[in-house]
Length: 429
Image (cartoon, rainbow, N blue to C red; front, top):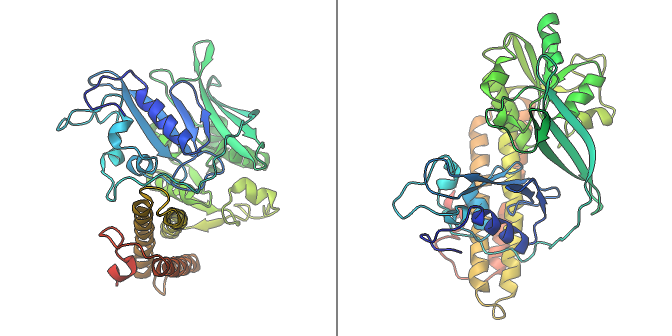
């Protein structure tokens, strides 16, 4: 990597991140000159969920910085960079000198936290896939203003070249008479299907808020008024929230961590301004409303089609358990890597150290699950709902499985203990 004081050209940091991902065997798909999607190094990714984008400095200096955001695991940028063997300074074309504060516009708060355990060694068990994706455009979702003027499109593309379905989305915007892939300066977002908002305001019918255009279209074909926004809950700006004032709103949550977090976010922002607001869950695990319908579970006689009404407390518990499951997935990867590096001791320099670092990572993820289980144990009472109690039991069973795996691993391996791989089970006792 370039030194701190060496002036680098704009985009150098983006090239470094791209090269690190490619060297680790992660799939990449372009989103233009300054952005791409990639499989996240912190968890198993069948379809790339890591957004990588370059943003120019806005306050001082030349060049810019790379922004990392995983839509699946929501991990901070420092953790993602560390998993690639990069430092936070490697995300900048021209890192600030020691003691100089980093520009806030270019570096998110999460990225300013230094990793506690140091960078993770490169993974050696991840399969290296160099697939030539053949993307096929399947749908174009057009966003209109209240007067019917098109201002944005979300392009859905699909590929099945690996035997598994992959999907990706591209955004483009109306700039004068042309569609462009870079958001114009001063662009104002709008909601999908604005006529549904207008109809709900006139009739008092429920307006359904989904997590994507496909689900909104599914509900529309079933006679429901449905809308969504582009690019997730983080882009649900205040003017979009204000459009629901006085309406009856049904938030549909996908049954995964991102879906629960989105629903919590929207509920907190909508419940004070709407006439009524409910949160609905599909009847299937890890499903969205389209999966619910395709499974034949849609009930026309029910006001909400057979989806389950859930409470904010239940959503928080479900999100906590989903986070624990994600930590468990990271735990399994870490143990697998620890085994693989341990087996190369004496053959590859640094393998013992790498095995110890991966084992410490497994311990860290085990602590995440422990803390989740302890928090749920304190929160759940006899008055808790069956959903909350079942989720707490799932977290307890998950912790038991991970604890057994960790102890079995530490008994089998004769690696020297360090301050980073203390037994998290003993620590929590």
